[in-house]
Amino acid sequence: MTRVIPKSKRPRYRYILFRVGIEPERQIHDREVTYVIMRHLSSHLNPNVRMIRFKGGYGVIRVERRDAIAARCVLESQIDAPSGRISITPIRTSGTLRALRRKSPDAMRILEDHLPGKG
Image (cartoon, rainbow, N blue to C red):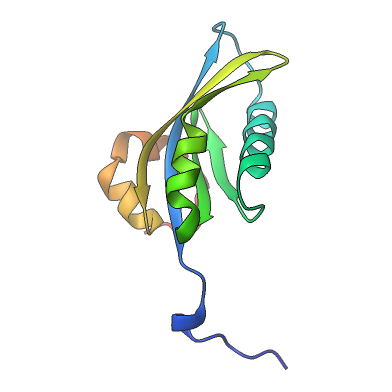
């Protein structure tokens, strides 16, 4: 039987909303961009980083609270990919997805249908 971990002992996460720009301007599949970003993040951070969703040039990643500042620094970068250069810009960091929806409604509207825990 598994035991329920008390809320005080569970890990605390931060959600980071970011925007992606691709140079030269061309159409690249979201799957390729996701792969390049996650490879970049996992090589610089704790491997527990999770991509919650990526669509339409915007994405949300989940990191542990202690790694939030380092994750924002790693996200503020340009990555060379086979299809071109990918520039990543963090927009906002929050402790919940609901707060991200409230604070950045335009960017989150693109992702809204695909995020868990709508509400």
